[in-house]
Amino acid sequence: ARCLRTMARHNKSVYSVCISADRRIAVSGSADTTVRAWDLARGERLRTLRGHNSPVFSVCFCGSPHLVLSGSYQGTLKLWDWRTGQCIRSLGGTAPAHVAPAGGLAVSGDRDGLLSVWTVAPKGLWYAAPFLVCRSDGPALPERASYSELSTAEE
Image (cartoon, rainbow, N blue to C red; front, side, top):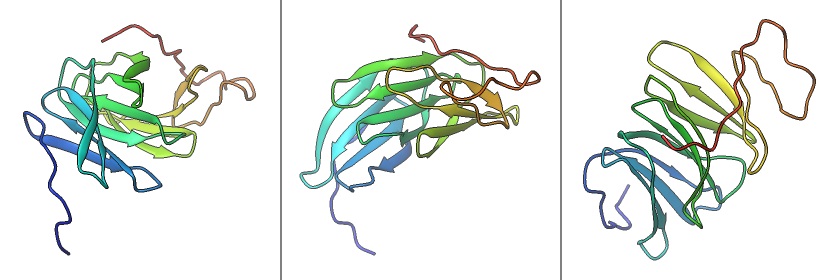
């Protein structure tokens, strides 16, 4: 392996990096509380996403090439449009959030051992149900499932 490019840096440690499916864009999450989008071919920072109040532990592309999901130390999950810098949805939490994409779904895990599955829709609702997959446009949620609607409130 060889280093192809070194890019400008965050102000503090980088905890997470994700590359888009087309390998053109990378996003990074940092202890400086920001998410940054990078052009891999030119090595340039495209945008800095601000809104978390604690270190960003996890980032991933989610559902489309322009949607990025981030998880912070405080447990906040945020869905961003990296092209505009807009935070589309935000959900506050109490524990560090780590995220992993799977098509239109994302899974978050926290220090309490809870895994939650989320549907990701740019303008739709997200629902979470521990260990269950629930879609906002699908059948009713099982009675024993807990679910939450994400708000647009900032962290």
